[in-house]
Image (cartoon, rainbow, N blue to C red; front, side, top):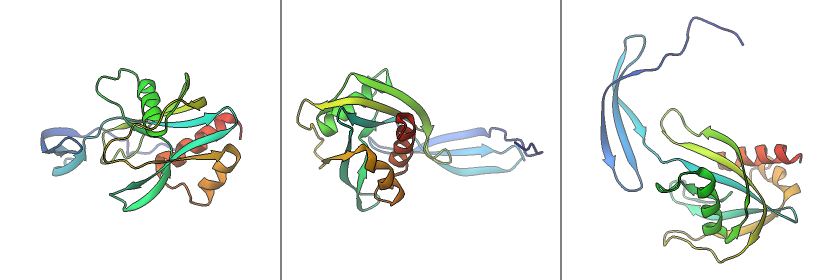
Length: 187
């Protein structure tokens, strides 16, 4: 790795205010001083909760995906199950199992933490926790929020890599976790 004179240094926050503070969206405006002396009084940051994403694999090597409409992008997407870590959940793995059960009706006791990532460090505050869930099996019907309409899909494990490569999977977290899980599983 090449070293140069442009060593990154954290910015100094001079003032911060929450300009939008709603249940599902929080936006903070920071006044910051950069190391080079420049000040920005309008740096906006989305204050977002941490989330989990799970690669659920059945005993017969089927991967459970969810297919649903996402309003901001105005499209229907195939994704891995996941969601927000609730305030009362002390471990991301607990949230991963809950979200898997709610969105798909599947569960397992075999949940393995793979990686913690940051999706958009320029504008978002949250982390995403990636999990691999083995031997998932259906135990219930979906338990969806009023705003959710989620179709559950079962995809053979050997087809997942091709789904990424041909663009059928194109949500960044799902793509990243699929590639990570496939590597972990030796596929």
